Image (cartoon, rainbow, N blue to C red; front, side, top):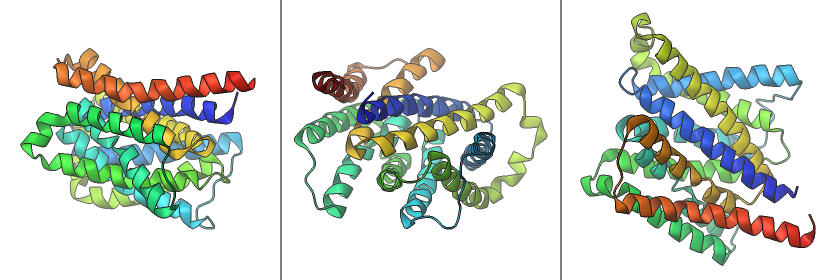
Length: 293
């Protein structure tokens, strides 16, 4: 299978796992402060990736790494903090849609940093996707919610992270994820210190809560590994747009788990977001078949 095609499917799997992580996170919003959940996500992710690396004899390097990996880890950590704040203050579909404003920031980053034009097909898909996000998010924009602005900021730092992730293609994915989650665990622990008493309250740890916490960590680990593989294999602009499928996945989870009802604007927004994903997957498949790949 052509590596760009493989990258798209890895990105779709990553989007699904991130949507599941958002669902687990949203289910914990009344039990823990968002800072506790953010730390749990980073630390469980870190422990799991270390175990996986040791079990498979994969390399783990923390200090002697390229600057692009440090940029990826620092920007990704800020993105995590913003993400869990947004998930604690907005419904899952709206929170996820904001977290996936990455393509427009990605297009701007590539245009500025690499001094190149973004392909027309990518620009059209970005426009369609952003319109879809706005339609889904519209009520919260009207309310001027602070969480909306945090979500937009999260997307900026996520774009910086994934841009540098694409530049770490010579590193093994376990090295990249271990470095990122190690940095994120340290920073989120420091941010969580004011809420430490909440985390240590044993009465909060019922089985559903424990399962949700583990779910946050496991799905976050799977999503990070899949996303890392996707950005190593494929174009960052296209992968960012395909990653918007996470919004559609999250919306379905909202309907199935929380019985949410969506209006015409939201449904239209979901379609506008999923069309670019379908377009890119179909285009790569057709191209590869024509080339006999």
